[in-house]
Length: 519
Image 1 (cartoon, rainbow, N blue to C red):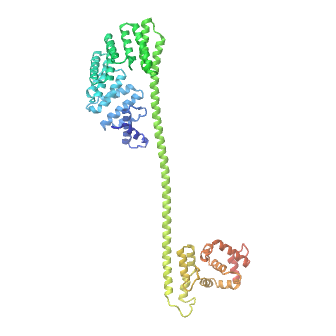
Image 2 (image 1 turned 60 degrees about the vertical axis):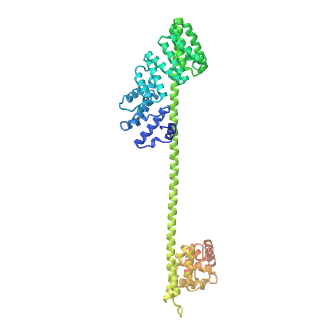
Image 3 (image 1 turned 120 degrees about the vertical axis):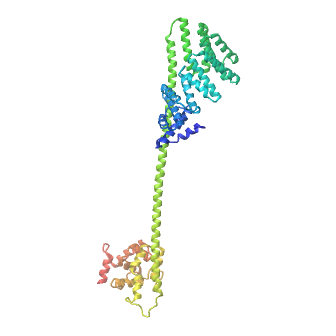
């Protein structure tokens, strides 16, 4: 803000003030924004919250107190409260023990505002103080010029004339042609107001001699000659000079001649009154219309500033809405990502747990298999009641086979082969079907032998395998795993069994088989 206020304001415009919940941050935001607009001479219509910053810093931070107060006073001027602005400037400048470096910007604005309000005696001490504390040469010249204006408004024309001569000499010495031109025109006006019309005319003629007759200020110079002629009683010359001034104004000012016309019309009315002894309504309405034009332009400028402030606020709201939308999208994506990550972790953890359980089960079964294989082979074939037969039944019991079939991983398939191959070779099957049939006979009162004796010529080996597994309570999926067939194939074979055995569609296969084998 000190070195590049444009960039500072651009940064501030990216911040949404409603999101600043801490008073110190809110105060700093509105202080910097208001002070930046003041330094840039931008509209302060939208800086109403500068009062919040000023109240916050009052008595806490002298620098920000003075600067925020200055910005608040200037805000008052922008909203049309010029008396309130002047009163606040005066209250700040009446504070004691303030350093010149801090008070100078405030004093400078106060003097400019007083000059625009045509203050005289009130403005003189402020302008004198400003002239004494300004350190920059150009600023000192400006302060002297403001003091000169204050002398004029206070009708202290001798002091104003001396100060104008001082300014002219300084401009001549330093080669400031444009400034010298302005100061000499000011001197001509002062001389005219003092009644020294001849000297005033000489100053104006001297300006014309130094510059071309149609220089950029020829309309104001001829207007001064018209005023001098009017003050000296030469009405004809006054009318002539005013006509020349009007023609130059049309040439130089074109459409932007409202300010000049406000003076020109007044002189025209006075000249006509002197010539005719009458006051025309057209002159009065002309003066009023010019003043109304100036007022309308000022209001238009204010409305434009207010509209700019509203547009800026709308941009800030739009930016806030976009940011909130992006935040919501990011939040949703984050939640979905967390859910996916959490689900992935759960699945991985579950699978690892199942793998560990399978590995532990496989190790236990492998140990049992190894112990059985390492046991001495009996001379006589083991009967069901011998320990070897009991162990074999335990290892190959249908519960273990069913458990393995529930999780048909390659590891479980290999484990099933090892269990089934303890006594003999499986011929590539997952189980040793002879052992399974023997177990079914033992558990279910010779069911397999009865089944094979009655329908052994009718049923295929696969169909007999399916039936004994159904008797043991295996599901279609588990049967498909153990027999190495698809579930659709199992359904087809079940339909074939119904047809071969003459079982009705609605009749249960197992119920039919148990009744037939029992008979």
